[in-house]
Length: 407
Image (tube, rainbow, N blue to C red):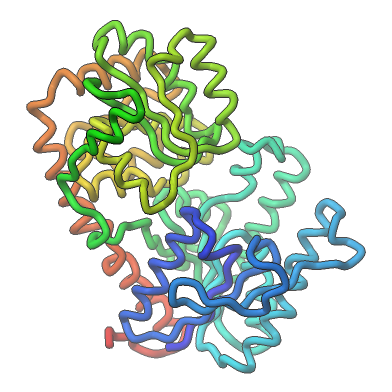
């Protein structure tokens, strides 16, 4: 089986998108399949590279458009589709793939569908999120505005014309089916973790804790990108109540992003700057040390379409390490976390609810061993890459008329 994956961006860039891609590719190769990979012109990598190898995976790159429409809204997105279609038309005769597997956004899906029709190759379109909803959170679009509606229409266009559709969670699957896509055409390939990369029982680096000024304190916090939808402002607004209940408690925020400056200012405005430590972004190979410092990981995502539909990866990584976690009860979290069994859930957008539930969790350390065991067992049995990627066998097999087996 020869599969050409069509991607928005890839390693060596670091993001949840690129990590999911790399995991899928490696597991497919472990099954004995040949995988090939091309990124569209939005990939922000080394300039003018036609091809690039990163971490043992070879990628074809697509040149950025320099045409008349490259800087014009909407038309520049059509340029992305057209450029990627041209690149696919160059690559496909060389590779001769059995399947084209396009991943979000829909620009990739549309380009792959056009190329698939041209060369008579079936197309799988994988939806990782609806990018019109992400654009609303980032402030580049308004819900039900013109750009939002156009992006949604393009997404539905790709979904209807792909030969098969995959997505990362049940929330997205339901939305896809509600658009008129046959349920039999849509398969969930859930987010997962590489179990071998996560160990249970990591101990806090006391030297690092002292360097951060946190010696002698219990720690809760968040590790990741600071987007508005992550709801980190809700966590900060809960700190006064948590501090009254647990004076030795401190909050550690590891990472950065669009909300970084706003969150730092909010901590000052709330009078809690002495109780919150912002580390800034840390090297990827150092992140584990910061996980090991935290007693409880908190994921306070806001309630909105994006967070109700999409499952995040970070809680799974926390469970794989046997971590204690608390999360808002948005749809994406409810799909992953069994309240009181693998973690705890609190009402979203509500600092008082967060403070109450996390405070109760901190006072109930006798329950922590069972939470750790259940979380780890969940990812070991249901949310690991071999289990997830095995679901592609039936999809590819049905499209190509073959029965796929592991090598």
